[in-house]
Image 1 (cartoon, rainbow, N blue to C red):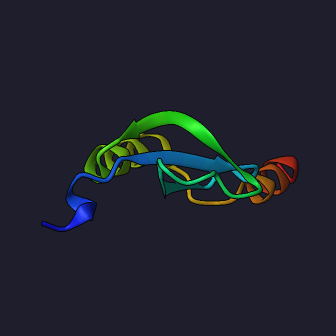
Image 2: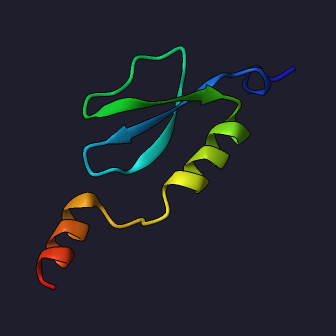
Length: 68
């Protein structure tokens, strides 16, 4: 059996509000923090689909909003 079938994942987010998956048994990389959601790959991807509705980095959204 493949070890990824039972792998637990954590949703991580960076300062630009970009989301990713990270293996729960590994240290979160520099520049990223946990988003408070862990589970199967599918559960984590479902959460990301729900919360990451604007793919633009935060700095771009702010720059575009300031020009209005």
